[in-house]
Structure formats: C-alpha cells, structure tokens
Length: 111
Length: 108
Image (cartoon, rainbow over all chains, first blue to last red; front, side):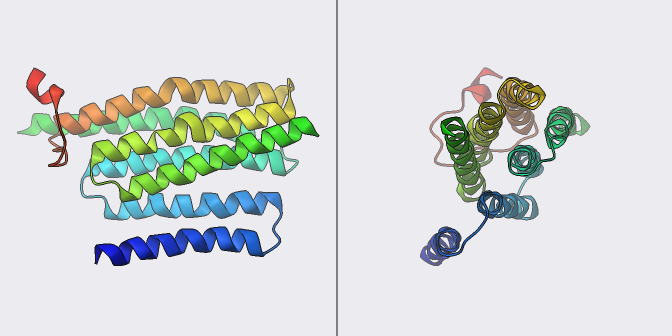
C-alpha cells in the first residue's frame, strides 16, 4: 500500500515535468503548471489534516503561494498592480496566522 | 537581456522551492516536520520570486515594492511559524513517536 502511494506520487511528478517538456507553453503557463499542483497539495492537507494546527499551517502556505502567484503575474503580464495585491495579502496573511495561533492556544484554557 | 535571464532563473528556483515545500507539507509524518518543510516555501520560494521581480524591473516603483514585500515576508514568516508551533504544543499536539528529543516539554 505504501509502495503504491510512492508510485502514484512519482508518476504524478513525472507527468507534470513531461507535460512541460512535450508541449509548447508560454513562460507564464510553465510557471503556473508548477504552482497549481502546489495549491492542490495544500488543499489536500487542509482536507486531510488530523489536527487543527495542520490546517492552520496549510492555510498559511496557501496564502504564501498566492503571493508568489501575484509576483509571477507581475512579470509575465503588463499589469503592475498585482505587486500591490501581493503586499496587502502578505500583511493580511501574517495577521490571520497570528490570530489563528492565538485561537489554538486558547483552547487549552477551557479544561 | 542578461538581467532578464538572471531574474527568470531566480523565479524558477523560487517556484521549485515552492513545489518541494508543498510536497513536504503533504508527505512528512508530523506537524513539526511539516512546518519545518513548508516554511522553506516562504524564505526561499516566495522571496526568490520577489527577488526575481526586483532583478527584472530594477529600481522602479514595482521593483521597490517587490523588495519591500520580500523583506516583510522574511521578517514575519519565522514569527508566525514560531507562534503556530508554540500554540500547537500548548494545545496538546504530540510529536511523532520516532522523534528524538522534546526540550519544550521538559522545560515546562
């Protein structure tokens, strides 16, 4: 069972790299082809995570990936306002993470 | 054109780090291991992308905003990681059974 999961993961990574090598993409699409599977992996951890803390970590990393997405869009399109979205998202993500961490910590005081 | 190539190389390295960090987020066995793997997404992945934006655009408004965003991420990501791990430890998340040491449990 464990070996089967290893094989599925390796085949998926090889599929992403093979699709990138075989077909002609624009540079933006080549970057997005690696960023979208990362977001899907984060969503899998949010769905599966055994403890609430795992979900908090995955939400934090999803926000960080969106910031990277905004940086990539700034370079490969002509719209320069994406970088301001990135700065605002970084501020908001930090405050949200600190608030969720405080919420997790406060669960101890109930018992 | 050389400057653009250097910027694209920075962005490629950053996206590779993002992908590997998310792979670690799914694959590793424990909350603390997952946190350790996934904060690499921030400190080299997204900061690498922002550094690439800075290299491509130079000292224009976009480049300055990108370098400020990278600086802010570099300052706040370790703080938030420390807050999450401390809160998880206080709320009773146990480490993996093959973990070697847990000094915070001893010090409490």
